Length: 116
Image (cartoon, rainbow, N blue to C red; front, side, top):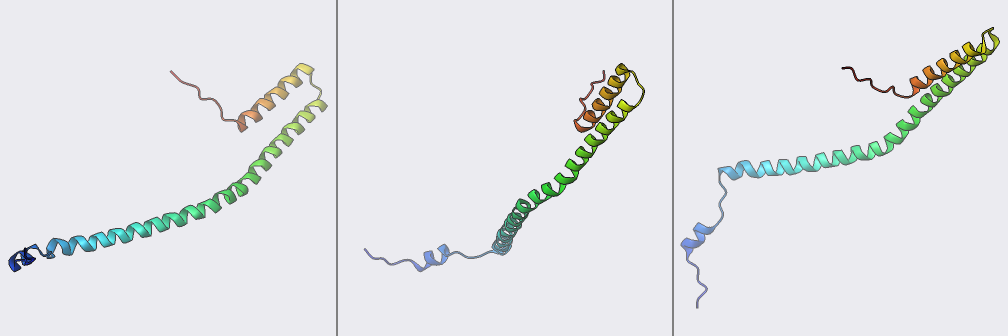
């Protein structure tokens, strides 16, 4: 047995680039580069948000708790003022419950009412 190849077969079987390869190969390289760039940008954004979210929560938390405490102080002050006014016990209790309900309704979301 001889390991002699036919030169005609060697020429035909060799890979040759065509016009479609001129378009496809750069397109593949651009797509791979864009994929790497977008993944790195996404990775950077995830890391930034990992640090930014807890910081934003701390920044938002303080004014919200201050508003709630201030509202509770105002309700308590109004209830104390009702004790000084010459009102009957029933009216005083009615006003006190009304203020408490209004303040607690502004803190909690109101239930939705279905209209027919």
